[in-house]
Structure formats: structure tokens, C-alpha cells
Image (tube, rainbow, N blue to C red; front, top):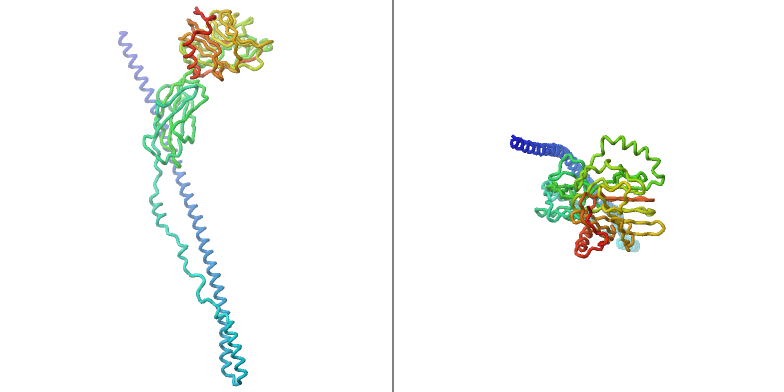
Length: 496
């Protein structure tokens, strides 16, 4: 009976999974159908715009050429009219001289005839008719302004749709996730010299496998990428995965997207647990600040929130490591001089990294980890279940590593940001200058219970940055550190 139930349960699980896949595919088809309709209308509009632009260019060219023809016509007309006017005047003068010469033949007196003959000779010599060029200055030929559209007509008749670029292929082997950056590399399966640029799209998700149409986050786009590789840097890895897809574009059209890929980008993400922090601390997600009023103004308000929320504790977010069931809203508030707040996510395995930045005027603060059973009067580093570095800026600056009520002074400059590296399985807790990645101190021990990030602050504030991968430089330094004798031997122990 039990075996049959288990078999049936597996069948039910398989069917449910298949139904989920089909439902996701149906949503993809519906989304694609709407895209076809919308994109068809869009390309028709673009085609109309292209042809309207072509008509406009032809109209402009026709107007320009017509103007040139009219200018040539006007120039030739003016030249011919000038010649015609000169010829008419010359002809008029020549006819008058011819008439005078004809009359001179009838003169009887020798002296008068000689005088008339000399006048005719002089006038003939100076006559315009003999200085004229009897050739038109311009021809009537206008064929040099004619246009042969045969080649252009052939080109227009051969006009076809610009080939759509094929979908690129993302090369998983060349993709890299490191230092809160993701490098995506792709290639074209066939060479296409008309590709102008690429468009890369990405989105964060908590689902592995193929992207879903309905996901909690929208695609973000990076346009006009000229190469076949791109690096997204400065990311906060607050989800388990990221989806990526890319498409090629030529001057007029974009091709289909590549098959999407999903890369794992998980990192430790936590907030500060304000429900159990000291009453003198103001806590908001990843920021904690000392309350100079002593918390009296908010005590009733906080208690009211606790009572109101006591029946329904805040939901626990998924994390890289599993969360202890007794983290939020299940322990006493820190009190006395333990101005402490813990993270709300437990570390039970793996390697993790986060950073802390203190306000410039912060008088005293500690950064480290502890077991969840840290007492409400306990201070970080003063118990055998907590480890930290402590900075005291009161009167003079001191920097020390603390554990089990023992301190080791650190002869290094206090950095603006402190990086915390926790290797739960390897039993190491290291502190770094977050900017230069200089190693400040390393605790070596054996963790036997889940760890919680811990913070103490007095007269100032701290900002915690989570969703960070272990930096490559830290990994390298840790390997070197593991190959050397521990500098923290005086504080090393096996925590019980």
C-alpha cells in the first residue's frame, strides 16, 4: 500500500511538473502571438515611412533637376537673344550702308563720287556686320540634362527585404560569474557582415532552467554593443539566478533572440534583525544607527509592533544557506551595554562575504559573527561563541580582534569599509580592507552551530552591503593564508 502511494505520488509530481511546463509554454505562445501582430503592424509602418522618405528624396531631386534645366534654358535664351539683337542692329546698319552705296553710283561729279566712295569704304571697315560671329554662342541641345533611370529602375525593381540576422549563440563555456560581475560571450553561427550591433537582455530570477514569461522581474536591456562579449559589473546578487539572451541587429532590423541561458548568481543576502536588537539602536534593513535619545521615544512604538506581529512572525527569505527556525522574533532583546544587532539569516555551510561601512563620526563598533544563543547581556568577542574585530574611536583609535574575552591589537589602519569572509566548513573567519583587499585578521576555529552576522555600534551608524560574492582577490589570499601558519593562534579555538 505504501509503495503504491509513493509511486502514485511520484506520478502526481511528474504530472504537476509537466502541467507547469505546458502552462508556461502556452503563456509563451500567447505572448509570441501578440508579438507577431504588434510587430507586423510596426514593420508596415516602418515600410511606409521608408517609401515616403524615398518619394520625398525623388521629389527633391526632381525639383533640383528641373531648376537646373530652367537655369540652363534661361542662360541659353539670354545668350541667343543678345546675339539676335546684335545681328539685327548690324543688319539694319548694313542695309542703310548698302542703300547709300547704291545711291552713290548715280553721282556724276567726280569729286563728289570720290568723297562718297571714301565714306562708304570707311563705313564698311567699321560696320558691325563684319565684326559679328555668325555662329550661335550656345546650342539648342539640352540632352546633357537628361537622366537615365535604367540602372536605378533595376535597383528599385530588385529591392528586397533586408535579411534578418540569425540568432546568435551564447557560449556558456566563455561566460563568467565572478566579483559580482557577469561576462556574457556569444558567437554567430554564420558570418554576417551586415550586423551593426547587438542587444543584450538580462533579468534576475529565482527559477532555474528556461526563463518564464511571467516572472517577478522584467528584462533589462543594453543596446548598441559592438563586440561579441559584454561584462555587467557592480551587480548585487540578491537572486539565485540570472537569465540572459542576445540578438543581432543590422541597420534596419533586429534578429531573433538567442536561446536564453540561466547562470547561477547566488550570494548571501540578509537584513538586520531589528526585532531583537538593543532598544538604543535604530534598525532598518541593512542600516543600524545609535539612538542618541536612548530609545525612549520609540520603546512603546516598537513594543506595539512586536505585540501586533507576535502572532504572525515575519516571513523568512530564501538564502544561500538554510535558515535556523529560531532567528527572528524568538529571542530576547539585547540589553545593558550589549548594543548589538544580528543578521536575520543563518550560515550553516559554504563560503560567504559581506561588507560593512561605518559613519565617520562613529565612536565604537564591532563587526563579526556569533552563534544564535548569544546572551542578551553578552557583547561580541567577549564570549567563546562570538568572533569580531572592534574599532574604538573614543579618545584615541584602537583596532583589535576579539574572541572569548581576549583581544589582539591589530597594527593596521582602520579601513573605510571592512569585508567579512566566512568559510563555515573550513572554520575560517577573515576580515579585509574591502577596497584594497588587504587581509586584516583571520580566526581559525571549528564552527559547530549555525552562525549569524553580528554588529555592535555606539554613537554612530553602520551600513551593511550583502548580496556579495567572495571576491577573487579574497579567494587567492585565503589560499595563501591557508598555506601559512595562522597569525591568530592566540585566539584560535574549537567552539563548542
